[in-house]
Image 1 (cartoon, rainbow, N blue to C red):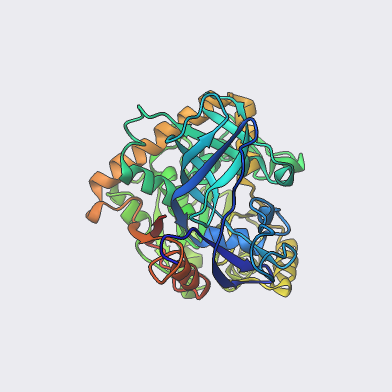
Image 2 (spheres, rainbow, N blue to C red; image 1 turned 60 degrees about the horizontal axis):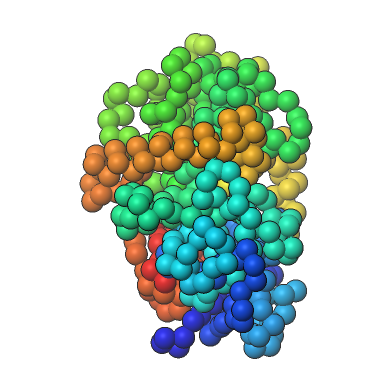
Length: 431
């Protein structure tokens, strides 16, 4: 299919089942207030697998419904779907006055080399747009926002910066958690849509020992780095325990752990219930709370850890927040078990989209996005200078080509579904 536009199509009931098809996703004349753009650079990670796993429940399958022009049975939207991914697309046509052919747009694109049409309304701040197609109306706001990149922007003119931005899309979730959820000034609830209270004392980390599960994930790495380098004065956590399968965690994303203002330790999963780990957790004299942040711990690690600490440290308040899910293909029974387990341990679910909406309401869109952009630029600049091989937050960039084939999205997807993805690698594809 050389020279032909391709799309990855997944079986909704088993997202490890993929097929790469020749496809046209947009044709005909362009409607008003629209653009037609072709994906140019897309990232791929365990996060994309989460979009597929929860595609029906959280409406991610509705982002780009399979077109009727695909061959049967792949044109059946009840059975098959197109998984979206974060990245950049080049505008081919536009009826939006402020967007021209050749412009670069950041946002949520199909895993495809075919051009797609977006229906856009401008919003704040400048160069931001909201996709308003009726089939996307139930999609969370985070996934309907598109950003036009000014041609004069020196950072986004740098291909490496664009690649790192695509790889670390999840960084902004970590930034929002650190800056707004765990902030005595803003104290935004992890899932603001619930309307439940989240007081300054809930957001206060000064007497809280934090435990992160799946600490080699990009979101967990990003959050640990934010704790180490971007906390307000006198609001550092009491200590940080990272639990994960890789040792290249905070020590690699923060170049000198001896300068940390709080105790830090990393352990593998098989040590998390050990006597020595329990002793380390209980050793701070001013421990008021334990906070477990589950970024996608393996094999029900969150349940086992919560149960252990609840019985061992019954007098210490324990909070658990779910941020990510395990990197695996979920079956309906897996989802049912996950929901039951979360209810049993009182896990609070985090929602990055709702947090961002709440933060924008407090700050205004311009201040929120400019603040996040400044901080991300700092992270990339400092960590690329400090780390070996130009890594960012301990992650090595791996660049693939195209949609189909072992070196394309097809091969990367298969490896992620088989659990062969590496926490210290970031996959990005030139389409």
